[in-house]
Amino acid sequence: MPVLSYLLCFILLFSPVAQSTETKTHFLIDLDSQQILVSSQSNNNVILPSFLEKNLKEMMPSHLTQTDQTIATTQDLLKLISRIPIEQWQARETTHVNSDLLRLTSKTERDILTSETTKIISHQNKDNRWSGIYFSQNPLFNGTKRSLLVILVNYSHELDLLKQSALLIEKGHWNFSLHTILRKGQFIGQAPVFKGSHSHVRFVIHDDIKVTLPNQVDLSSLAINLMHSSPLIAPIETHTALGHLTVRLGNKELATSPFFAEVPIETGNFLHRLCDTIRLVIFPH
Image 1 (tube, helix red, strand yellow):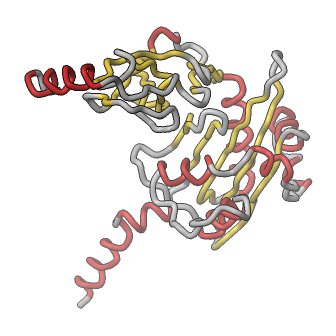
Image 2 (cartoon, one colour):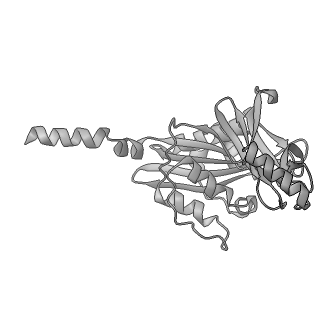
Image 3 (tube, helix red, strand yellow):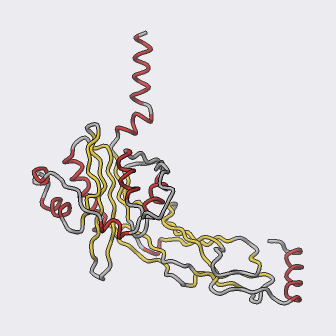
């Protein structure tokens, strides 16, 4: 019997669930590019305390639904956060933090945490484990603003939580830069069109594509790929996505976006349609 008890304790102690609920984790997220810049996790799983999930979902605009989905992966986390307007974070009142504890932080850390540009969205202790959500929006020299979100989970000491949040905010603002890779309406490529009034369709995007990169990364290292179904057959409308664009750095996908026709492509005349029909039969795509 004792052997079975020891075995059960061992399984509970070293099981993935037991480890994941006790391990402290952190995320640094750029809200402008919807990227996780820094994560203490090597896998794609996300385990947040229920009160942190609740805090995030409270930020959702009231007209949006389907907020009851559990955040289980980094994609779930980014999907939820992408639906929260920056204005929601800006309007949130900052949570009070013990002033005596703040005095134990360095001046730089204290300046970051007490700045008007930092909002402490959540800062709570549950079962002797501290977790929090911190929003920081700093103006840049060109008049724009960088918006960062820091999420920290399962810290055993409140002071460590505060110090780590300040460190991540500082790292996000100083070690990373936001870049607009492609702009709304920009021509990004073209492809043949069959049975249409035009022989080719020009591709454009409907929203700016932004990525956040470490300061030392050269933009020329980015790879932009277009994927679309083939063949493209008229008629083609400008509001229908024709494919997806991805921006990658090495093996890492940084951004993805649908692309569209720059102008509508109407159906061609009878002879044109007939010729293209024959071409598609002889040379299927």
